[in-house]
Amino acid sequence: MRLFIFAVLSALALSGPAFAHGTNKGAIEIIHPHINEPFAGAKTAAGYMSIANEGAQADRLIGVETDAAKATSLHMTEHGSDGVARMKPVAALDIPGGETVVLEPGGLHVMLMGLTATLKEGDMVPAVLIFEHTGRIEIEFSVDPADGVDHSKMHHTTPSN
Ligand SMILES: [Cu+2]
Image 1: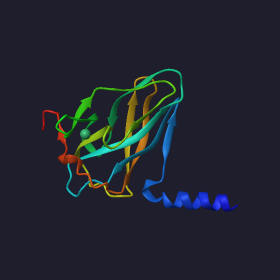
Image 2: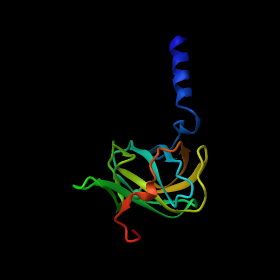
Image 3: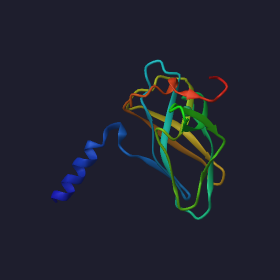
């Protein structure tokens, strides 16, 4: 019983908007898709999640749709020899069979460009992930506490920057 209580308390400590949630379709599981609350007035935000492929067949994430932004793109953050982190677009994201691909700060992320609404901690942001084989998977990004990073001020190698 004590162990059970400890587990519940641990879950509570992690709960609120950051509480893990996820979606399954076919062999693909989307774990805790989230956006850290952007700065007030920010035009961009980054979405993170883990994508697990429990099947044998490889799949690819080829697009993301959401009404919360005018456009989305998959980005990879790279650290140059000058120590500056830059992001470059990735056309598609391979999800090998039996593997989990993690989108996290400092690495892969979904870039939401031209936010159409103010995203506040606790909001749920509907989106659709489009996979080559599994097709469309409806998810909701939870808006988690701000992480202190103004993503819109990061360097992008996209033409608009
Ligand atoms: Cu980016």
